[in-house]
Amino acid sequence: MKVETTEKKQIDKKQLVGRIGDSYYVCDYLFTYGKDFKGATATVLEPVSRASYEE
Image (cartoon, rainbow, N blue to C red):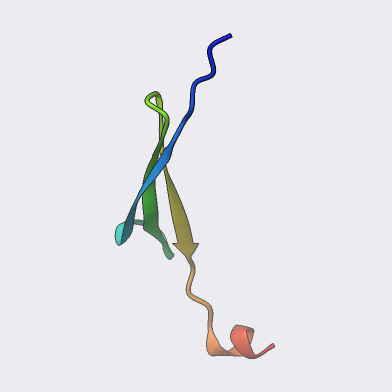
């Protein structure tokens, strides 16, 4: 039986990649897992009013 090891490689970005309405999308990092799987993670930032924050 052949056992294949996979390795995750990560590149940190922390870069603003887009905006839709009042939502801002920031790419956190890009990754590869093994040789066939690639992806990215992101954070969505949405502004709130001071009144909403203080509730």
